Length: 75
Image (tube, rainbow, N blue to C red; front, side):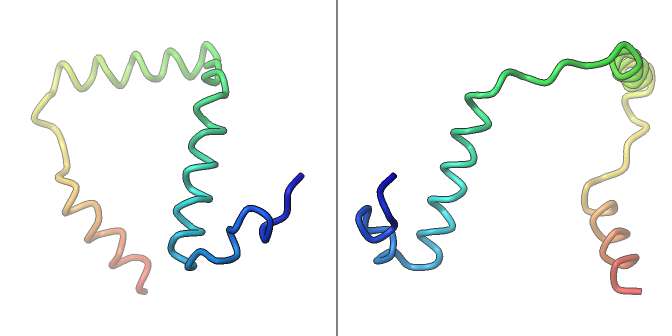
């Protein structure tokens, strides 16, 4: 396998190397088959979808979820 120096990766900035790592990880994930769901997980997803379809206005805005999570994290 070629080294970082041979590939020229050592000349990239930290941000460029991190972006490259993300691209590599994304390509690995894309090559993997989707995970199979257990019957219990499939049933739970169906239950949640049915609940959402029956109650489409019963939601919490992302901004509220984020603010509450950040407030808990800072305690």
